[in-house]
Image 1 (cartoon, chains in turn orange, brown):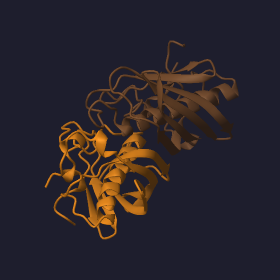
Image 2: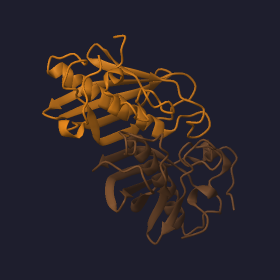
Image 3: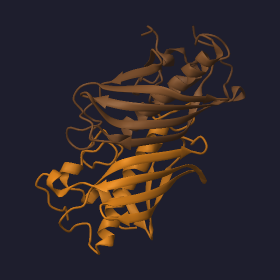
Length: 161
Length: 161
């Protein structure tokens, strides 16, 4: 895996996100990396993110899938343009829709893994599918439709190298 | 509106949820009420729940829709049985699937409102649709398929009156 996460390339304006912003000290600090054609992120849930005792809160699962997918969408868009993530103009994606199927309760002990696949890159839209794995089981699957943020809505940013 | 929220009737075992558990001091403490045939909850986002500066994190929106919908599913199931929420056996629902369409950025200043409608009550399954409103605009819409937790998975609980 690369040493630098997708989110570490985000311009400062996009680094305040509760899910994945490197500047949000109270946030989840989700970090995503390529692993071949898939992308992966890991997260160790805090005890506060309980659903019922022993199991992970579904909103945390949705959050992991959401931010990992928008990060993967950005990385996929750079790949589609044959560019590195530290080149201008920066590409950043927002969530148009999020779908999660919860297949089984997700144990809160241990590390969660989210693996994502790029289903489609079409114009300014990227579709990402993903699965959340805990203790060897796929506990949830997700699909995110991400759309590229228009350049004029990104205030004075350049790529972070 | 009733003086007591749906979530305040949950048995203790179900009161640890990060989204809506009354016993989770670090959680969102979502509280849902009937308002005629709709249900409603309100939430004032914390600054930490930022997406980009000035706007609400999508994972928080998903969380509000999720817990408000499972709460509404429980309340709807009691209504369908013609029972009050403080009667046994307690009914509690988990999320089978969550879908959110993000229609526009949601301003973080002020109070968010989630209004939900019971689309279907069929056996142990309840489908809830919802909209999230901020500053007078519908910023997101959601659909949750909730399923009733089997009684044998609820450890020794009775209703909370």
